[in-house]
Length: 179
Length: 204
Image (cartoon, rainbow over all chains, first blue to last red):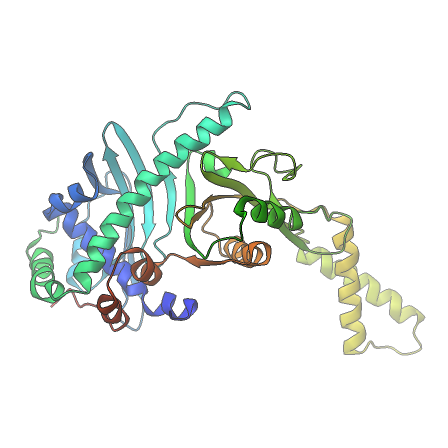
């Protein structure tokens, strides 16, 4: 296996492409999301989206934030060659809702809010609370893991250049600059 | 108990290898050997060690369990003494003036200045209490997966170093390349293609 520091920097573009693809999938291919979670109600962009034009010498980035934010500028940035580097997501499965941010370069999750759990009032409550939290974290990691695996299998196949990329380009170019 | 907080940040790892059998005893031993030790009266500026999830300021891995269900749950404690630079500067100036008073010459050499600086920092470090930071760890032994509840660089580096020292096992951080290579079920030929990937151009 490659040196960790080298592979982190050399292949962080894969994480950016994953988040860009995820935006495309959320808008166009709900069946991919359903395959990742049979109980999925929805997965959508939350209150933060960061894009970067990583191919240009001067790293240009655009951050869109706010609960009622529109993504017109994000679409414009995609049209100009930017990729998604950070994505806040709202995930609903069954009757539960999660919110979290995925960073493309590391696949780290931050600001992860799980559905409400029972309060810990006594020392005896801790074990149950931890197991409940683990179960709820596991749901998010499973979702992201399944989606990332689906993406990477496409990315290393001929289907990426032959099918997926033309569709993504067409989505970027045809998409109106409003959410 | 960061893992029970309403909002958390998580860094994911793959544990490379398995502990020596009996695994739980080997892990307990590693935790005990590298349990966090208080260093307030010490001249060190920082200290790292394992601590109990439920009782982070009085860790006891000998008599209490660190297993919850099938998971190993414990914490990394990283304490740091932060001496404000202006305080260091003031004490260095005072000490230098004092040394010059008793010296026959009117200057200090570079080595003398460095020795004063080291002495001042060590003396202040003994007097300043450390600020504790505690980050939770969940280790799924069966699946060789580990979650660390922070994305901060310094604690993650401390975790990787302490983990190998304690359990003789490496942690592989899961980021785009390693998650694809180790965690996505790719075949050998697909992994070869992965190595050769270059960025996609989405815009015309």
